[in-house]
Length: 138
Image (cartoon, rainbow, N blue to C red; front, top):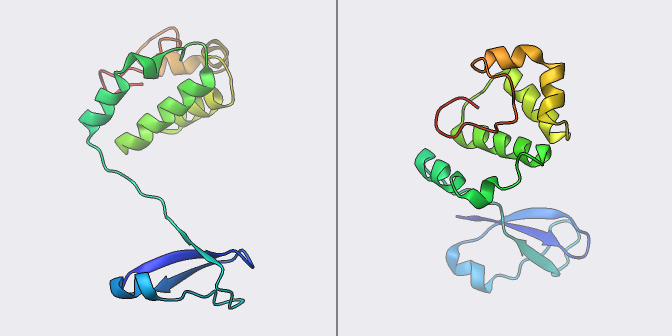
């Protein structure tokens, strides 16, 4: 039997209830805590699986990359999303870089604070080129 999530509008508590598909349309659902019939069905989050190709293709849209150089927080969010979508642990240096971007630190400030990072990402002297979408490096 499927489990349905509800929230009581009287006591604001959340609860699950097991109903058959047939019962779903006819059952009188009551809060198990306060017995109120003033309940609301909660719709849970869903996740849509996408291929790595679809994700990279979506990121190739120029509108998604607009103004990233001027917004370190947006760049950090994008890099975190890319790492999450690809399902790879990028290591502590990457996490530190993204955390600094998400806090609003500019690529130039990060480069000054973490000079070893430029050597570790292929000898680049600047981080303000943004993420590399062509290869595995960011």
